[in-house]
Image (tube, rainbow, N blue to C red; front, side, top):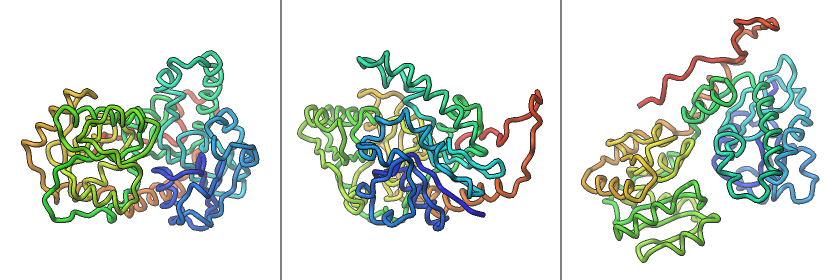
Length: 385
């Protein structure tokens, strides 16, 4: 069977691109279709791939400022010709899932999330913007196009039960949960006692709530190292006290060393999944996390970390005090992280694809009142412990 892979855009490196590397290794002959491609923003491992782009690639500034061209994204993906392929693996948090396929071909979507700026976080994104009156009709149109794109998907897979709930709410579809791959083998315990510092590894953007970690370190006079870059850096530097260090972007080896040496990772944001808590646990270190979202699926409360119940300085300070009165076994942290290693991702994804490809295709007569939605699956029972 001929396989193609789609992704929303390919011009920088992050969690979605790590998943794409795994898919490329599983299907090395599959071309990658995307809206825009800029090799300069990608690591060596992704150079030389067979990447095929939409008409947006030829539009000035689209490669570097792709978000400004979101209204054109649905059309860009519909214009891609995938008629030669039997299976299309769409990896998407935007519009890549809206590609047009043959009637007998399968569109299997690994969905990172329905676009949050169109759905559950829309009002947060537009609050206070002077262009809100202009944004509203564009967003309304994009929501309709996103819903149409979701209807073209035969099978949804996703990263977490948190996101599966959004897919159910916004698209009316069930999704099988397959956690994203984590390079667990790159993060190892060092066998030493932890050093006297807490750690944050994060993009410095508002919803990550790194400001909470900084405020608590100031209050408790705890040493905090912050790894990452982003638009919040200047604000965080302005509020950081003498015990807080902003280290900027570091390479993987340096981050792995910090994971292995820290007392604990602080994870104050509400994430869909969150790879950094798994990386810290792989290095044998516990996590102090906001008890919502993906952290509930990656951290075991009281065994590999501690949850706090609200995103406030008081709640996080109480959690740190509780952590410092407790003890955690690095071996427990490591074992929990191994559930998310890359080989397990490939095994589960391969099994899901094989099951869908081998399943009989059922034709549902139009206007059948009791017909289930095509591709519907049993609702997930909830995150495993």
